[in-house]
Amino acid sequence: MDLRSACRMCLFPVQMLYYVARASLLSLLPGRRKDLTKEVVLITGGGRGIGRHLAKEFAKQGARKVILWGRTEKCLKETAEEISLSGTECHYFLCDVANREEVYKQAKVVREKVGDVTILVNNAAVVHGKSLMDSDDDALLKSQHINTMGQFWTTKAFLPRMLELQHGHVVCINSILSQSPIPGAIDYCTSKASSLAFMESLTLGLLDCPGVGCTTVLPFHTNTEMFQGMRVRFPQLFPPLKPEVVAQSTVDAVRADKAFLYLPWTMHALVILKSFMPQVALEEIHKFSGSYTCMNTFKGRT
Image 1 (cartoon, rainbow, N blue to C red):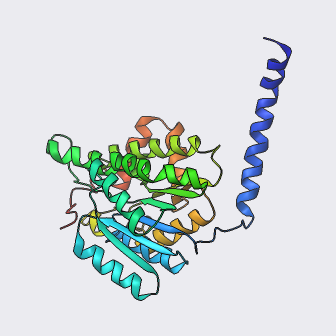
Image 2: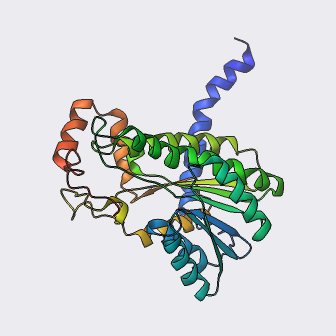
Protein backbone atom coordinates (compact mmCIF):
# COMPACT_ATOMS: atom_id res chain seq x y z
CA MET A 1 0.00 0.00 0.00
CA ASP A 2 1.46 3.38 -0.99
CA LEU A 3 1.57 6.45 1.25
CA ARG A 4 -1.37 8.18 -0.46
CA SER A 5 -3.67 5.20 0.01
CA ALA A 6 -2.64 4.88 3.65
CA CYS A 7 -3.40 8.55 4.27
CA ARG A 8 -6.81 8.18 2.67
CA MET A 9 -7.64 5.21 4.87
CA CYS A 10 -6.66 7.16 7.98
CA LEU A 11 -8.71 10.18 6.94
CA PHE A 12 -11.81 8.17 6.01
CA PRO A 13 -13.23 7.89 9.59
CA VAL A 14 -12.66 11.62 10.10
CA GLN A 15 -14.47 12.41 6.85
CA MET A 16 -17.37 10.17 7.86
CA LEU A 17 -17.75 11.96 11.20
CA TYR A 18 -17.58 15.32 9.44
CA TYR A 19 -20.35 14.45 6.98
CA VAL A 20 -22.55 12.98 9.72
CA ALA A 21 -22.13 16.11 11.84
CA ARG A 22 -22.72 18.36 8.83
CA ALA A 23 -25.88 16.51 7.80
CA SER A 24 -27.20 16.58 11.38
CA LEU A 25 -26.61 20.32 11.62
CA LEU A 26 -28.22 21.05 8.26
CA SER A 27 -31.29 19.01 9.20
CA LEU A 28 -31.86 21.37 12.14
CA LEU A 29 -31.61 24.52 10.04
CA PRO A 30 -34.49 25.76 7.89
CA GLY A 31 -33.55 25.09 4.28
CA ARG A 32 -34.67 26.64 1.03
CA ARG A 33 -37.97 25.15 -0.14
CA LYS A 34 -38.63 24.28 -3.76
CA ASP A 35 -41.15 26.48 -5.55
CA LEU A 36 -43.93 24.36 -7.09
CA THR A 37 -45.55 27.03 -9.25
CA LYS A 38 -43.87 25.74 -12.43
CA GLU A 39 -44.11 22.03 -11.63
CA VAL A 40 -46.19 19.46 -13.52
CA VAL A 41 -46.94 16.61 -11.12
CA LEU A 42 -48.02 13.11 -12.18
CA ILE A 43 -49.36 10.77 -9.48
CA THR A 44 -50.00 7.08 -10.11
CA GLY A 45 -52.91 5.64 -8.16
CA GLY A 46 -54.09 9.23 -7.89
CA GLY A 47 -57.82 8.63 -7.67
CA ARG A 48 -58.11 7.56 -4.04
CA GLY A 49 -56.32 6.91 -0.77
CA ILE A 50 -52.97 8.58 -0.27
CA GLY A 51 -52.81 9.39 -4.00
CA ARG A 52 -55.95 11.51 -3.81
CA HIS A 53 -54.60 13.46 -0.84
CA LEU A 54 -51.23 13.90 -2.57
CA ALA A 55 -52.97 15.43 -5.57
CA LYS A 56 -54.88 17.84 -3.35
CA GLU A 57 -51.77 18.75 -1.37
CA PHE A 58 -49.60 19.42 -4.43
CA ALA A 59 -52.39 21.64 -5.76
CA LYS A 60 -52.72 23.39 -2.41
CA GLN A 61 -49.00 24.12 -2.28
CA GLY A 62 -49.01 25.68 -5.73
CA ALA A 63 -48.29 23.05 -8.39
CA ARG A 64 -49.04 24.39 -11.88
CA LYS A 65 -50.63 21.18 -13.19
CA VAL A 66 -51.62 17.87 -11.60
CA ILE A 67 -52.01 14.67 -13.61
CA LEU A 68 -53.71 11.56 -12.23
CA TRP A 69 -53.13 8.00 -13.40
CA GLY A 70 -55.17 5.03 -12.27
CA ARG A 71 -57.43 2.16 -13.25
CA THR A 72 -60.78 3.38 -11.87
CA GLU A 73 -62.21 6.22 -13.94
CA LYS A 74 -64.91 7.16 -11.42
CA CYS A 75 -62.35 7.89 -8.68
CA LEU A 76 -59.99 9.68 -11.05
CA LYS A 77 -62.76 11.88 -12.42
CA GLU A 78 -64.04 12.85 -8.96
CA THR A 79 -60.57 13.77 -7.74
CA ALA A 80 -59.75 15.71 -10.90
CA GLU A 81 -62.98 17.69 -10.65
CA GLU A 82 -62.32 18.53 -7.00
CA ILE A 83 -58.83 19.80 -7.78
CA SER A 84 -60.00 21.75 -10.81
CA LEU A 85 -62.61 23.50 -8.67
CA SER A 86 -59.83 24.60 -6.33
CA GLY A 87 -58.22 26.48 -9.21
CA THR A 88 -55.44 24.09 -10.27
CA GLU A 89 -55.36 22.58 -13.76
CA CYS A 90 -55.89 18.83 -13.42
CA HIS A 91 -56.02 15.99 -15.96
CA TYR A 92 -56.59 12.27 -15.57
CA PHE A 93 -55.74 9.27 -17.75
CA LEU A 94 -56.60 5.60 -17.39
CA CYS A 95 -53.36 3.66 -17.06
CA ASP A 96 -52.36 0.37 -15.47
CA VAL A 97 -48.72 0.81 -14.42
CA ALA A 98 -48.25 -2.97 -14.50
CA ASN A 99 -48.66 -2.82 -18.28
CA ARG A 100 -45.35 -1.58 -19.71
CA GLU A 101 -46.66 -0.76 -23.18
CA GLU A 102 -49.64 1.09 -21.74
CA VAL A 103 -47.34 3.18 -19.53
CA TYR A 104 -45.14 4.19 -22.47
CA LYS A 105 -48.17 4.94 -24.63
CA GLN A 106 -49.89 7.09 -22.01
CA ALA A 107 -46.63 8.87 -21.16
CA LYS A 108 -46.46 9.98 -24.79
CA VAL A 109 -50.08 11.16 -24.65
CA VAL A 110 -49.36 13.14 -21.47
CA ARG A 111 -46.39 14.91 -23.06
CA GLU A 112 -48.45 15.82 -26.13
CA LYS A 113 -51.59 16.97 -24.32
CA VAL A 114 -50.29 18.40 -21.02
CA GLY A 115 -46.51 18.87 -21.25
CA ASP A 116 -43.35 17.58 -19.61
CA VAL A 117 -43.77 15.90 -16.23
CA THR A 118 -41.31 17.38 -13.73
CA ILE A 119 -42.43 15.54 -10.57
CA LEU A 120 -43.30 11.84 -10.83
CA VAL A 121 -45.00 10.29 -7.79
CA ASN A 122 -45.04 6.48 -7.85
CA ASN A 123 -47.89 5.79 -5.46
CA ALA A 124 -49.94 2.99 -7.08
CA ALA A 125 -49.95 -0.21 -5.03
CA VAL A 126 -52.04 -3.26 -4.18
CA VAL A 127 -52.06 -5.71 -1.26
CA HIS A 128 -53.79 -9.09 -1.09
CA GLY A 129 -53.15 -9.79 2.57
CA LYS A 130 -52.61 -13.54 2.53
CA SER A 131 -49.88 -15.97 3.49
CA LEU A 132 -47.69 -17.47 0.79
CA MET A 133 -49.50 -20.82 0.68
CA ASP A 134 -52.94 -19.17 0.63
CA SER A 135 -52.03 -16.75 -2.17
CA ASP A 136 -53.10 -17.20 -5.75
CA ASP A 137 -50.14 -17.17 -8.16
CA ASP A 138 -51.68 -14.50 -10.36
CA ALA A 139 -52.35 -12.31 -7.33
CA LEU A 140 -48.70 -12.58 -6.28
CA LEU A 141 -47.56 -11.59 -9.76
CA LYS A 142 -50.00 -8.69 -9.80
CA SER A 143 -48.48 -7.26 -6.60
CA GLN A 144 -44.95 -7.41 -8.00
CA HIS A 145 -45.97 -5.95 -11.36
CA ILE A 146 -47.82 -2.98 -9.87
CA ASN A 147 -45.82 -2.26 -6.71
CA THR A 148 -42.34 -2.84 -8.14
CA MET A 149 -42.13 -3.17 -11.91
CA GLY A 150 -44.59 -0.32 -12.43
CA GLN A 151 -41.95 2.02 -11.00
CA PHE A 152 -39.43 0.82 -13.56
CA TRP A 153 -41.77 1.62 -16.44
CA THR A 154 -42.96 5.03 -15.20
CA THR A 155 -39.47 6.16 -14.27
CA LYS A 156 -38.05 5.03 -17.62
CA ALA A 157 -40.88 6.90 -19.33
CA PHE A 158 -40.36 10.27 -17.62
CA LEU A 159 -36.82 10.41 -16.19
CA PRO A 160 -34.97 10.90 -19.52
CA ARG A 161 -36.75 14.21 -20.17
CA MET A 162 -36.03 15.36 -16.59
CA LEU A 163 -32.34 14.68 -17.20
CA GLU A 164 -32.47 16.66 -20.45
CA LEU A 165 -34.11 19.60 -18.70
CA GLN A 166 -31.83 19.17 -15.64
CA HIS A 167 -34.98 19.58 -13.62
CA GLY A 168 -37.18 16.93 -12.02
CA HIS A 169 -38.03 14.79 -9.02
CA VAL A 170 -38.97 11.12 -8.61
CA VAL A 171 -41.05 10.25 -5.55
CA CYS A 172 -41.90 6.81 -4.19
CA ILE A 173 -44.60 6.15 -1.60
CA ASN A 174 -43.10 3.06 0.00
CA SER A 175 -43.84 1.51 3.41
CA ILE A 176 -42.07 0.75 6.66
CA LEU A 177 -43.04 -2.87 5.91
CA SER A 178 -40.24 -2.88 3.34
CA GLN A 179 -37.83 -2.93 6.27
CA SER A 180 -39.94 -4.59 8.93
CA PRO A 181 -42.17 -7.20 7.22
CA ILE A 182 -45.19 -8.83 8.86
CA PRO A 183 -46.92 -12.18 8.25
CA GLY A 184 -50.04 -12.16 6.15
CA ALA A 185 -48.82 -9.56 3.65
CA ILE A 186 -45.94 -11.40 2.04
CA ASP A 187 -46.74 -10.09 -1.44
CA TYR A 188 -46.83 -6.46 -0.29
CA CYS A 189 -43.74 -6.64 1.95
CA THR A 190 -41.65 -8.31 -0.76
CA SER A 191 -42.67 -5.86 -3.45
CA LYS A 192 -42.04 -2.86 -1.20
CA ALA A 193 -38.58 -4.17 -0.26
CA SER A 194 -37.78 -4.41 -3.97
CA SER A 195 -39.19 -0.93 -4.48
CA LEU A 196 -36.98 0.45 -1.71
CA ALA A 197 -33.87 -1.10 -3.27
CA PHE A 198 -34.89 0.44 -6.59
CA MET A 199 -35.15 3.89 -5.04
CA GLU A 200 -31.91 3.59 -3.07
CA SER A 201 -30.06 2.65 -6.24
CA LEU A 202 -31.77 5.38 -8.27
CA THR A 203 -31.05 8.03 -5.63
CA LEU A 204 -27.34 7.21 -5.65
CA GLY A 205 -27.29 7.02 -9.44
CA LEU A 206 -28.65 10.57 -9.74
CA LEU A 207 -26.11 12.20 -7.40
CA ASP A 208 -24.14 13.54 -10.37
CA CYS A 209 -27.26 14.70 -12.23
CA PRO A 210 -27.87 18.38 -11.45
CA GLY A 211 -31.44 19.44 -10.83
CA VAL A 212 -32.90 15.92 -10.54
CA GLY A 213 -33.61 14.36 -7.15
CA CYS A 214 -35.50 11.58 -5.38
CA THR A 215 -37.68 11.23 -2.31
CA THR A 216 -38.71 7.90 -0.76
CA VAL A 217 -41.46 7.96 1.87
CA LEU A 218 -41.75 5.07 4.34
CA PRO A 219 -44.94 5.49 6.38
CA PHE A 220 -46.31 3.31 9.15
CA HIS A 221 -49.80 1.81 8.75
CA THR A 222 -51.98 4.47 7.12
CA ASN A 223 -55.73 4.62 7.57
CA THR A 224 -56.92 3.98 4.00
CA GLU A 225 -59.34 1.49 2.49
CA MET A 226 -56.44 -0.50 1.02
CA PHE A 227 -55.59 -1.82 4.51
CA GLN A 228 -59.18 -1.97 5.72
CA GLY A 229 -59.58 -4.44 8.58
CA MET A 230 -55.93 -4.44 9.67
CA ARG A 231 -55.74 -4.23 13.46
CA VAL A 232 -52.87 -2.87 15.56
CA ARG A 233 -52.71 -4.29 19.09
CA PHE A 234 -51.92 -0.99 20.80
CA PRO A 235 -53.57 1.74 18.69
CA GLN A 236 -52.97 4.32 21.43
CA LEU A 237 -49.21 3.75 21.22
CA PHE A 238 -49.12 3.14 17.47
CA PRO A 239 -52.07 5.04 15.94
CA PRO A 240 -52.53 4.65 12.20
CA LEU A 241 -51.43 7.66 10.18
CA LYS A 242 -53.97 9.88 8.47
CA PRO A 243 -53.50 9.93 4.67
CA GLU A 244 -53.64 13.73 4.60
CA VAL A 245 -50.73 13.84 7.06
CA VAL A 246 -48.70 11.49 4.86
CA ALA A 247 -49.51 13.65 1.84
CA GLN A 248 -48.53 16.92 3.50
CA SER A 249 -45.29 15.45 4.86
CA THR A 250 -44.46 14.02 1.42
CA VAL A 251 -44.91 17.33 -0.39
CA ASP A 252 -42.87 19.11 2.30
CA ALA A 253 -40.09 16.51 1.86
CA VAL A 254 -40.10 17.02 -1.92
CA ARG A 255 -39.86 20.79 -1.48
CA ALA A 256 -37.00 20.33 0.99
CA ASP A 257 -35.29 17.86 -1.39
CA LYS A 258 -35.20 15.20 1.34
CA ALA A 259 -34.10 11.79 0.10
CA PHE A 260 -35.78 9.55 2.70
CA LEU A 261 -38.71 10.25 5.00
CA TYR A 262 -39.86 7.93 7.80
CA LEU A 263 -43.36 8.50 9.20
CA PRO A 264 -43.62 8.88 12.08
CA TRP A 265 -40.01 9.72 12.96
CA THR A 266 -40.03 6.93 15.59
CA MET A 267 -39.75 4.42 12.74
CA HIS A 268 -36.04 5.28 12.68
CA ALA A 269 -35.75 3.49 16.04
CA LEU A 270 -37.39 0.37 14.60
CA VAL A 271 -34.87 0.20 11.78
CA ILE A 272 -31.93 0.78 14.16
CA LEU A 273 -33.14 -1.89 16.61
CA LYS A 274 -33.53 -4.41 13.82
CA SER A 275 -29.93 -3.86 12.71
CA PHE A 276 -28.39 -5.26 15.89
CA MET A 277 -31.03 -7.12 17.92
CA PRO A 278 -30.99 -10.93 17.83
CA GLN A 279 -33.75 -12.64 15.89
CA VAL A 280 -35.27 -14.16 19.05
CA ALA A 281 -35.74 -10.70 20.55
CA LEU A 282 -37.30 -9.38 17.34
CA GLU A 283 -39.74 -12.29 17.28
CA GLU A 284 -40.83 -11.53 20.86
CA ILE A 285 -41.36 -7.86 19.96
CA HIS A 286 -43.51 -8.88 17.00
CA LYS A 287 -45.59 -11.16 19.22
CA PHE A 288 -46.00 -8.50 21.89
CA SER A 289 -46.97 -5.80 19.41
CA GLY A 290 -49.47 -8.07 17.70
CA SER A 291 -47.94 -7.78 14.24
CA TYR A 292 -48.07 -11.59 13.95
CA THR A 293 -51.86 -11.46 13.85
CA CYS A 294 -52.66 -7.91 12.69
CA MET A 295 -53.67 -9.15 9.20
CA ASN A 296 -56.06 -11.83 10.51
CA THR A 297 -58.99 -9.41 10.22
CA PHE A 298 -57.79 -7.86 6.96
CA LYS A 299 -60.51 -7.14 4.40
CA GLY A 300 -58.78 -4.82 1.96
CA ARG A 301 -60.30 -2.58 -0.63
CA THR A 302 -63.82 -3.59 -1.64
